[in-house]
Length: 112
Image (tube, rainbow, N blue to C red):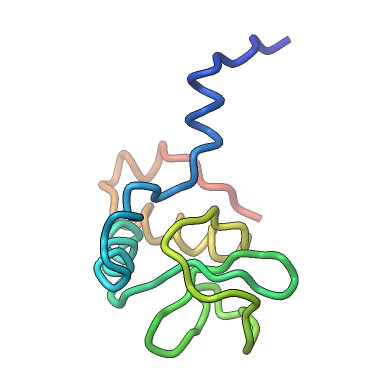
């Protein structure tokens, strides 16, 4: 049986990802998201009609996974959990390929 998590750990888990970017101007925050995810162009989080949050390119609105909708429910945001499974896998592949040889071997990436 797993030990219960401390309140500090729960607060850390429920904190919105990229919360430190809220103080930055929108364009600068999107460029920072691209740098963190090893992307060449500014990206932002955007909610799709199905409920999944994609990582989309600002220039043309294309989702990182390539399967995003043509129209989104909300405007692009700099915070938010990335819930599109294919976008998460694309980010994981990019981050894993930027690591060294040993780290790439031992870094867990869910393959499906």
